[in-house]
Image (cartoon, rainbow, N blue to C red; front, side):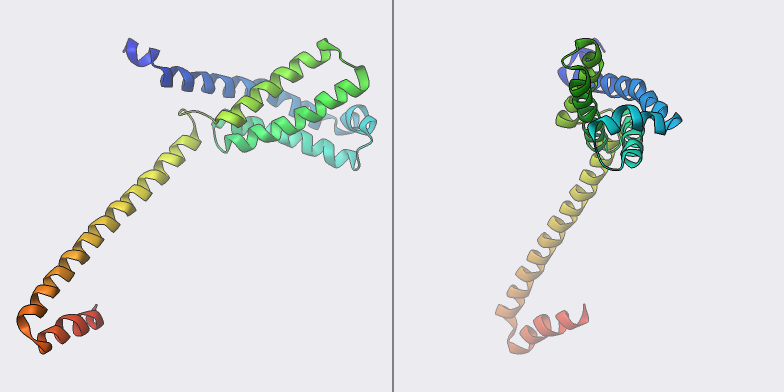
Amino acid sequence: MLSTILTKSFSKDTAFLILRVITGTVLIHHGFEKLANIENFADAFVRPLHLPFPIFLSYVAAFSEIGGSWLLILGLATRFGALAIVGTISVAIYHALVTAGFNIFLLELLLLYFASATSIALTGPGDFSIDEVIIRILRSDSDDEAVKETVKSKANKANLDSKEDTTSKGGIFQFLQANLLSDTSS
């Protein structure tokens, strides 16, 4: 039991689970705060950057934080969710640098979110995720198909070997029957 817990894979996957769930859980409220007063968010954060369509971009930021956080928490399309968060946090970091300069008190939380989401985007969600379950199902299906193809090719080869034996022993009529008639009946 202890050796299972202390293995590198189990520890790494548990760390990714903790990182995903805590990052998503803590970040999700920022998206809901944006949605609560979208006009205020657009005036305070998007318009100072002189970006077009500030209300639309505010909604994009809010939904990328909410949706990306849920994807992280669930471990479903995890890299996509992490990249959505990285994009939104990158703009937030840029906003903090443009409006307040290099103020570590404003940047520290943003940089932690950025580092967490980037780490998840680069390394993946780990084994304790829905993504991993989907990958394992797809792999088992492809393995089953590969086994079926191997069995089928061996059966075809055995069938061809038996046909060759019949042709060498039988003559032209048995050769035609074995090769031409069997192909049209299947």
